[in-house]
Length: 261
Length: 319
Image (cartoon, rainbow over all chains, first blue to last red):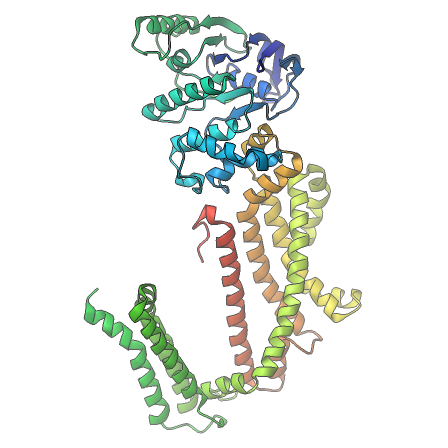
């Protein structure tokens, strides 16, 4: 089975925008192994380096030291084996929904052979009938769906989600959570999701990684042992919730702001 | 809208035409204007009447035509009345010197009688404009792309562009005429130059403002650098590139007129200058009318192309 991620002693420093100050250590000797087919969430205080870690797995940045392996191959640059859905939908505004989703297949010159995948994924995310629409004609939830389909259509072994549902209203959000779970089950890939919503992490994941403040390390690795479909009002659900919040040391209060790092 | 209101609007242009004809024949000529062989102004007004009647018939059947007609009818009447007033002032009164303000009969007559010669000149101008434009726009696009995408190219080329670009094209005329082997080559260069600078500037700025996230998205989807340039940077810069082409086109018109007045013997700019030198101001006006029509046709065409290519971002620049 593919989609095994191994993060070994990874550190990442950024130059401080204020040049007179020290470099920012986003991650410091971070290690984590993710089994193939796992749905794992990264949660932690604002600016703790969750998104940084995701970008490193995606190959968009390189670690300052340490290694990340995907199926025993070192990750050095972005690749179509890792689908990436960014904060906000970031669809190409000059392409229709259909062409946005087909972008990766065309870029890899495999569109001719996998043309039917495009319509399959359009229907999968419920955008049938909107093939010829431009992104600005869609609602936020629909844009996010299209963006998911774009990341999925190349059949990646790993799906990286960077707060994919952050900007959506509560109802759209819950719908999309279920849809993402359906997709995960159907295609059986490894999903790494960054979120700042504890409920979302518990509802969706098999494992929740609670990260400490900068420089970040694994504070706790919690297996969520709940039957699916999960009910948010369940007692055990609430137990997980209090446990995670306690580790995060918020005592029931969740910080609102999220800074992109 | 009330029915009577609509009918009044549609009749307005016809009333304006009747009034124009009455003024033409009813008022006495001042006799200062050179007589023409035919009452060309009346022919012109009648041609407009004929066209208008055809459009009215089309409007009876087509809803789209009807809307446009009702909307434009007052404007058409206004233009016709303006022509009538110009005609009265130039041919019926002695307010303005007849040498510099020829009658409409003479201008329209000239447009008609010299039509073949005028078309030849227009074609010569358009050819020069097209060749210069294609050179300028393509080189400008490539320079802008290199400037915008590659930091090293930007380091060396940016200062050059910034120093040379803003020099007014007309200031290059003396140098261009002596450096290039033929006047035609010099003229092509000058027009190309006028288009090159704005296209370079706007292409480079458009490429540089391409969203970083879009580049990252395409990297994660497996796109190569070349693919990213062709399918992310360029489409994303397209609105800006079009703005550059628009500025370039406008400045190429100005340059065209300037270079044609220099050592040329064809082209519509040359024609105007020549007519002025032989004190034929009816020719000067005819030339101006032709230029106005052609330039606005070219710009309209340009915006049609833009609307077609940039359907995804409607209504950013209105025309």
